[in-house]
Image: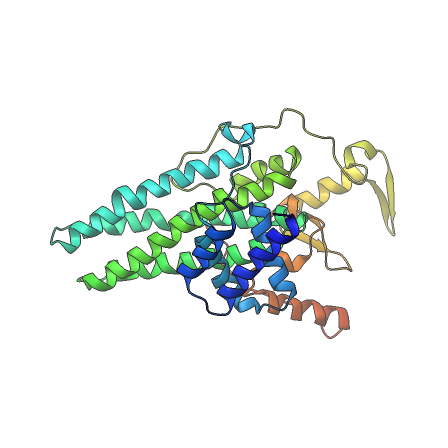
Length: 357
C-alpha cells in the first residue's frame, strides 16, 4: 500500500470515529487494512482532520479514542540508546511511569478491592491517592519542557491535546481524594472515582511512551534534551529520588546569534552610560523578579531575572507565546496581547500563588 493510500485509509477510520462510529467497528476496519501503523502516520491524519475544521473541543476526546483503536498495533521504532542512560530525561520519565504503574496496579486498586470487600484499607487508599497526586510534577515537567520542544519543531496538536488530558487527570485524582477524605465514603462512588482516575493515568503512560517520546525522538537533538535535563530541578520529580546527572556526549556550541560569552567586551551605549553584554546579563539576572520578553511577533525571546517564580524552558524561546499556555487559558492570553497591540492597554496585573516545590 502506498503512503497516500495508507494515509487515506487512516483518515477514513478517523472520519468514521468522528461521525459517531462505534469503537469495535473502527478497530475491525483498522485490522483489515493494517498490520502496524507508525506514530507519524496517526498524527499526520489528526492534523489533517484539524485542517479540515475539526472542532477543537472534540480533539481531546477523539485523540483518546484514536489511541485506543491503534493500541497494540503502533510500530515500534529503534530505541535511542541514550534513553537507557540513567539521568537522561526519557529514562527519568519512564522510571517515574514504572513507579506510577506499580502504585496503581499493586497498591491502590488491590486496596480498593479489599475495602469493597469490607477490610479497613481506607487510610492506605488515602495515602496512595496522595502519592498519586504527585503526578502533577511529572506532568508539569512535560508541559514546561517537552511541549515547547514539540512546538519548536511544528508538532502542535499532540501537546495541546495531552495538556488538556493532564488537567483532566489531575481533576480525577482530586475527585477521588475528596471522596476518600470523607469520614464514611460511599464505596461505589469511591470505586468509580478511583477506577476512572487509575485508567486515565495508565492510558497517559501509554501515550507518553508509545506516541510522545517517539515523536520527539524524530526531531530533537542532544542540546534539546540537555535543556530538558537542566530544567528538571525547577519542578522536581514524582515518587523517585533526584536522578543522576546527565550531559550529552557531544553538545553543539551555542546556536543562533553569537553568544554573550563571545562578545563580553562589546559595549552597549545607554542614555546614561554603557555596559558590556556580560555586565548587562549579570545585572538582569540579579533583578529580584522574573523577566520574560515577548517580541512584536508574539514570540518568546528572552527569560531572565533573579527570581524563580514559575518554571520555564529554553526550548520555548522562538515559540509562539500562546503555545506556552493551556487551551483553557489561551483565549485570555490572546485577548491581552490583542489589547497590547491595539494600544487599548499598556499593562496587566495578575495575582497568583506559585506552585510549591
